[in-house]
Length: 94
Image (cartoon, helix red, strand yellow):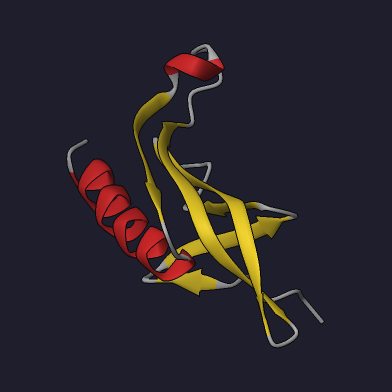
């Protein structure tokens, strides 16, 4: 059985530890979200500080120069919210 890729608003969402990538590396842009702080709510870790970066996927560009926009949000929900808007706008403006 093939592994189902999680999607949000038509773009892939992949998590590795505290990093979440939103979008496809085949596109010009991708969003990188990093969970910086969490708190325990019952037995769940809930993100309380998330860094959001809109990045170019071009590997010929130096990694620090790939960052187009960045912000910090106080929940994963608001981070994904801004990520979806940034990614849509960036991909639409090709």
